[in-house]
Image (cartoon, rainbow, N blue to C red; front, side):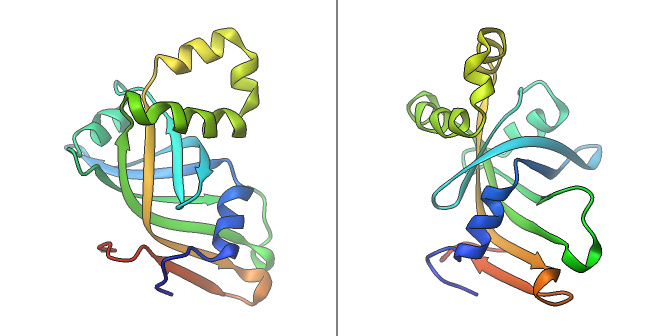
Amino acid sequence: MTDSACPAAIRRALAAHTTMTLAYADEDGPQAAAVLYAVADGPLLYFVTSATTRHGRALARGGSGGARVAFTAQRDGQEWSALTGLQGRGRCRPLGDDERAAGWRVYLARFPFVAESERLRGALERTALWELRPDWLRLIDNGQGFGHKEEWHRPGAHSG
């Protein structure tokens, strides 16, 4: 499906999860890292990670356009006949000061325990907040039939 609006089923699935496995490549090859994420309209995903981690260093090398990444999100322990999850690709970049406040509000709304802990909040506020802007998303929902898929492409985005 190619449309300017991301389908409601995909938006609901993004909102239903909190952890994504983020895949990237660096000079040592492909790697993946699990990160907690919050979702905003667009869809836009926000996550926190230090630029000193392997994935943080790889993402930071993406330049002004952002690093190209792939990701998945799903719950653990699902039966195959009812499996639901997401696959996606997009660009990932650290947010600058002007954008960080809006992204941080979205992140804190999703994870209020961060704001409730002065120690945790302080640690995360000193860490980079990243935006992942998906340009392709696929919802897999075996509950609607084995292999049922719904896709979305951001208009004008290269999805390869």
